[in-house]
Image 1 (cartoon, one colour):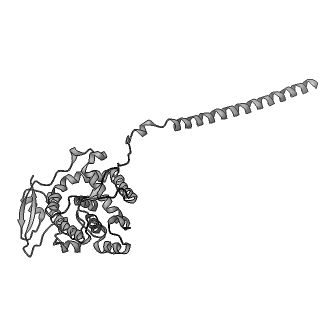
Image 2 (image 1 turned 60 degrees about the horizontal axis):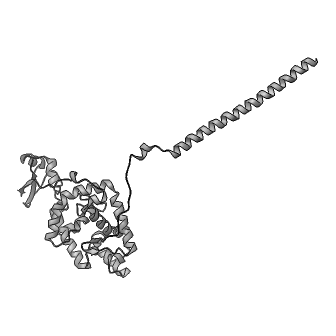
Length: 319
């Protein structure tokens, strides 16, 4: 009996020892697993994937504001912190608005050669070509309010300056004619407000609204006025576009080898009759309907009912 009790006692000791040993092993493996997991996480934090970093090896820098900026010869008051910061914003936005800015640079090579001589012939400062960029990105855009073309004329204003706006013809899309109309409008605004910067602001917000705000706020320059968000940014955006598009390489845009060529290889045909099909007309002159529309976007439908016998000058691209 004593021997049996001794064996039972020894068994209990062995079982307790095994239990302690199992618990110790469990604690040890739990610690090892936790340490391994923590170590892996620490490695990820300390040594991130370098491949992901090198996918976009850009260096972001602010634009140098320690230089003079002007619009049409009228200085931006860079000692005015508000004006300085508003210009800074537009320079940053348009410097890093890569896709749109690249397209604007490319399009400027195509359309500025058309716009520049018309501005000069009408006594309008060359800087106003950048107003056209601000208005439409040099495209035949349509605004939510219904303004159309590179210069974004509303129907009534376009007609005031002699542009035809009808079912089959919309000369807001005629770059040469619309630029002449824009010159006339800008000249009128300059005469009314006395400065090119205010004329540009009035082009955006409207002359009646700008005059009302000037009277209400007792302001005499653009920089005195607290205008709506769009107009407050407008002239500063034009100045920023001028800085970038006139020296794109200074802002990191090296695309001089891929600019869009001018659309200057064409002949002209006078049309004073109805045209049943512009597609057939294009084929007759050795081009395509698509090319005819690119060179003459002011032809807005597929035919022309010219009952009055008005003369239109249609560009025929040379193949």
